[in-house]
Amino acid sequence: MNINNYELFALTDIGKKRPNNEDQAGLFNGEEFKAIIIADGMGGHSAGEVASNIAVNTIINAFSLSPKPENINKAKKMLHRIVKRANASIHKLAVSKSKYYGMGTTLVLALVLDEKTLILNCGDSRAYTYTRSSKEFRRVTSDQTVVQYLYSMGSISKEEMLTSPKRHVLMNAMGIASVVDYDLYEISNDYDLLLCCSDGLTNMVSDDEIKKIIETNIDDKIENLTQKLMNQALNNGGLDNISISVLEAK
Image (cartoon, rainbow, N blue to C red; front, side, top):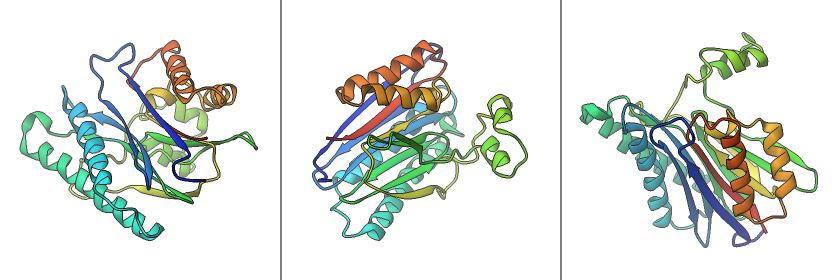
């Protein structure tokens, strides 16, 4: 797939219950590589909004100044350098000003190169792929949460994950420490659609519902497909900020 044969679109909404939107949805539509980004901020007052804004803007600005990586290993090093810089900016502000103390943000980022896609995850925002020919809807990332850890250790069931009082407790986030930790996935560009989203979507809309909306609207404009995902989250309650970034092969 030619790197320029992709369409990108992002949408964010405050939802129906929150007083402000602490999410950020970002796009980088470069000629030599593309990226879609979601950051879901946390912290008192406007601190979460500040953290997510720093993360997305730092990364997009760095991408705009970065040459195309020569290979996948250099792409991984580029990502590490950029995310490390974003983490440092958030953490420095969090420890230097009391009103930002404890702020942080999730981050899920998909960097699309000619033949490979790198997906970086810190927290519980998610990345999914959809392949038209096989109708496969695949969740790429694993939530960095207490309940996901307990499930992976066999301590709780999938059903218990949904009702646990610890289901929203993160084990990792950007800016909470001076050193950033993240998961990095490398996948082939054999998908037709790549979706990054905050938990404002996935807590309101099940994976089966998301898959059905994508399947039903995959031939529609990317803006309409994204809006239908957003509408479903709002119709199902809209209890949190909702952010969606989509990349689609054309």
